[in-house]
Image (cartoon, rainbow, N blue to C red):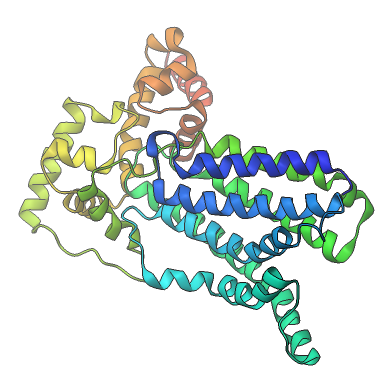
Length: 377
């Protein structure tokens, strides 16, 4: 760990990222990114503490060292609140969320005398031992608990997003889930420094810290808007996201006759206008095409087809791709061209969706159909 250059570079990188995320490009996911900025700033403080200690400045920069120590209790809650904001369509601040910062406030009050005078709080030695032991154990427990909660939130988001979008690649927050795994590695490196002292890991830790900082920076600054809908649509989507088999909130929106009429209108639109060819097609956009509410369209797709929005739209895209694959257009377009012409926004998504529905990859499907034609001849 005796590498102040790498630690200093990491410190500067995450502080710069925190500054940029306060006003992210395009003001995308603003609340979520500001919490992510707080998280990045706490990482910067942690790196600053290591940097000062490596240079032997821990005594002359006592206040900075104490502040860096205190901010560790903000790090995990800030990341969790950032992820909650990313995955919640109509996020509103709740006063109770401040309770996540309670350990930080308590530790700050405890450390205040030392920060101001250099003297610890005057309490009995046994009490001081108990307090520091509690704080020592609270930090790793807090970190593991919030990491787990964050991971579960992102996992649920990747399921829920299929209720409202037809292409998930830009909004599934895979980059943030990947970062959680990187962060899990960083947590292990931190525990190694504190507890295990494995020599090989200790030597490469500065490099891994720097790589993780640039990983987060690269993806955080390239993120797309998760719910790029109007405020009214986000409010409607909110209840759809909250709906689960254990907690259903869907109610009958239309009677049987109206449901049949809406089904006919929807199928006529899909067959004639082919809105599924737009890779950015979303539940609110399709609802606008038909002239019904987001809730009504979601209810229609769930009840009439027993599918979610993602599955419903991509079923049409697969049928379109099958038509193109078996036509002369395939020779001109190739697999990637067929994917784009069918409404998919990537070759990977197309191949995965096609194989899941058809049991064959697009190439295997073309070969199988060609063999069938030869047998008939």
